[in-house]
Length: 380
Ligand code: FAD
Image (cartoon, rainbow, N blue to C red; front, side, top):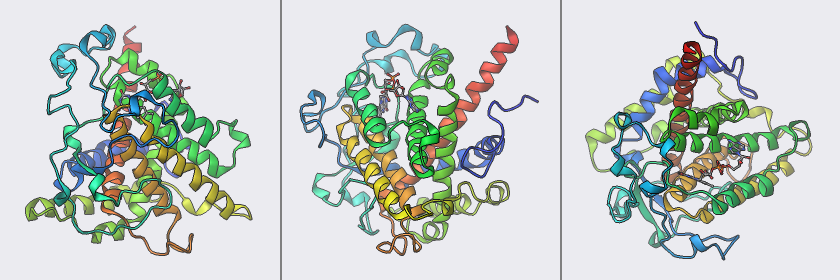
C-alpha cells in the first residue's frame, strides 16, 4: 500500500488526509455530484456584468455583457490538448461564442426562485436583492473550465486578492485567523487551477498545482472548512424547502441533502472537520473579526472585476459559498449579536453546496493525478 503524500492531520483541522480522501471518494463526491444536478442546485442567480468598483478603466470590463469566448483552437497550446479519446472532440475547443452550450445561459427567469429569505450576508459585498439586474444561470450548462482568461487582467485580480486583502506575511507573523483567510483563498485558487488543469495533460496539471504541496494542503483545508459549515447548519438545511415545482425531483433533493448532512460514515470518521470555536478568542477577537470581515468583503467585490464572464460566474458563486460558510461558522449562535439565528438566502445555499462540490471534485482529481504520477515514476 502506497503511503499518502500528505500524511497526518490537515493543518488547523481535525481529520487526516487519508480519511478525507477516503470519505470524499466513497461518500461525499458521489453524493455531491448527484445533488448539484438536481433542479434546486443547478440554477444560480447572479449579477453578471462587470460592476468593478476598483478599476473602472478595465478594458475587458467596460461593457455590460462583457464576455470572453472560449479560447480559439489555434490559441490552445498543442501540449494542453487532451488526447482525443479522453473527452471532448477538438471542435469543442473552438471559439464558442454564439453557441448556446457555451454562452452563459440566460433563458431562466425569476420563477426559478421562490421563497427563502433575503437577509444580508455580513461577509459579502453582493447586493443580490435587485431582481431586475439578475441573470438566472444553469450551472450544468456552464461548467468551470479552461477559458483562456489569463495575463494582466487575471493577474491583477489574484494580486489584489492576496496583496491588498490578505497579505502574504510569513506564516509565523500571521495570527491564526488571518492565516485562515489566506488558506481559504489559496485553497479556492488551487481548486480553480485544478479545474483549469483538468483540461490539460498530466504534465501541465503537475506544473500548475501538484508541484506546490502548500497549495494542495490549502485545498484540503478549505474543503474541511466548508464541510464543517454545511454540517453545522445541518438542522437548518434539513428543514429548508427545496421546492422547484417538481415534487418527485424535489423529494430526491431533500433525501440527498439528508444523506449528506447526517452521514454516519462522515460522523464516524470526521465528526468535526474544523473547530471554529478556537477562533476570535482573546481581547483582540471582535476587532480582528471585523477586520477580516471587511477584507473578505473586498475580495467578494473584486469578483466584479473578473474580465471573463464564465470565470466571473464561478468566482462569484464560490466566493459567495465561502462567505456563506463564514456566516454559518462565525455570525450566528451568540458570536455576533446582530445575527443570532441562522437565516440563509436560497442563493447562499446553492453557492455553498456547489462550492463544496467543486472542492470535492478538485480533491478527487488531485488524488488521481498523484496516483498517476506515482505509477509513472514506478515505471521509469
Ligand atoms: P495564476 O493562477 O493567475 O496565479 C497568480 C499567482 O498567484 C501565481 O504566480 C502564484 O504566485 C500565486 N498562486 C497561484 N496559485 C496559488 C495558490 N493556490 N495559493 C497561493 N498562491 C497561489 N481561468 C480559466 O481558464 N477558467 C476559469 O474558470 C477561471 N476562473 C477564474 C476566476 C477568478 C476569480 C480569477 C481571478 C481568475 C480565473 N481564471 C480562470 C484565470 C486563472 O485563475 C489564472 O489567473 C490564469 O490561468 C493564469 O494562471 P497563472 O499560471 O498565470 O497563475
